[in-house]
Length: 266
Ligand code: KIV
Ligand code: NA
Image (cartoon, rainbow, N blue to C red; front, top):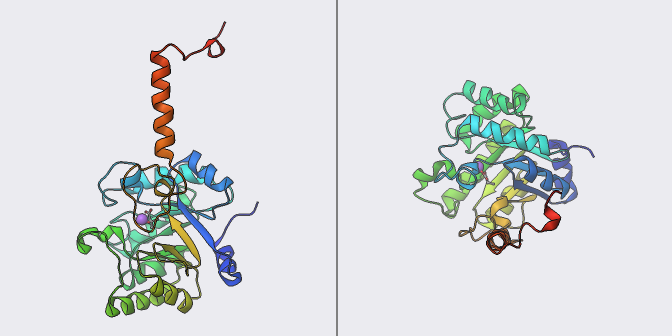
């Protein structure tokens, strides 16, 4: 099975074949996603809130991200593995950005990195790409700016904001990104960006017209238990499946049903 590469994704856009991106944070999950044929495994900095119990993505460190990225890379034979660069790992200087991005490929076995932001990140993107590091862009709702946004809400709604987002997308493409993730933007705006750019776009709450679709794994599997954003479709309810298994286990232990003779050594 050949590895999904930046060229594969470009071919898929040309042929009109939709790509799929889900988040993964560990080895067994990476194996499942790979077996199911998911094209891109993103070790999102959603690691912070989804897996590590932080309030948002801001506290995630390079070490935490690399630790989880290497586990995912060990589990993915076909999928492209993308490391999501944490807050402050690429915004300080271009040298920091190149160095930290390179660590994903060098130490964690990732094939690409993702970072948030538009024109203000163009120099960093250019330097990373010149170093040989494929970069995925991320515009719209960029959660590392949650305090600046004053909460999580749809981006690019006004005419000005939409125009700015389109400009940013073009600047990032010119800087060399191989794909662009659009989070929480109106479907029409995402369609326009997808038409304007040559590279594939990925929709995370950005409607059906992008080149591919993105969701946080724990949200789409109903593993988080809590409230999920409007754009998420729950394809399973793992929360209920797991609670059922755990309470049955406890009951059977207390009633002496488990372990049965078949679970015991003679
Ligand atoms: O960290 C994350 O999970 C993301 C989403 C857009 C998928 O960046
Ligand atoms: Na992220």
